[in-house]
Image (cartoon, rainbow, N blue to C red):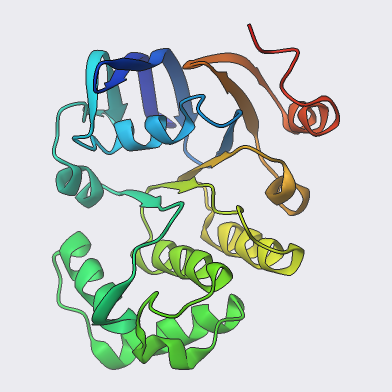
Length: 246
């Protein structure tokens, strides 16, 4: 049985008339945590959005195979239902929709099964305690009045509740203090198992101090130009990206 969960083959992507990704190749197996690092504007977020087929980004060539199925041209909600989750760099505020109701609705859409509310709330409370979140936030409007750290923890909470096969975390560590980064890392460790995978997108190495990763990829100017282990992130922390820039 194949361990391969997602494979990106020679992907070229435009935003408007501008070519952003210039032949991305990436393979992630079940049970692995991968990191894409690179300076701002290198194509990291575009890679995440291309996987979920955000219509703002146009695929020019190449394909994406997820769990044995070509998902290149599927709609975003169809890709999500197949088990792909993405946390946002700047999570949206949704007035009038509580955290509980949002997650209940999302869980129902992903699984296609009715959610038993009492059991669901107990599960939510347990995860929130692990993530050092105030349980009262369950009844607050999604992200409204939340601090930056609370919003990022809320994204990790969504990941734990929805339990996707593949989680993409876009700049989850940006703007967080050391304690919040440790909590987010703990959430990722709680999520990880031998049947799922995680892709972390970041431009710095802070989150890697408290998280074990399998592969680090350096993305510069729309291409992955170097792949290594955790030591590659250590080199970037010490020397920056200048040696990789063309």
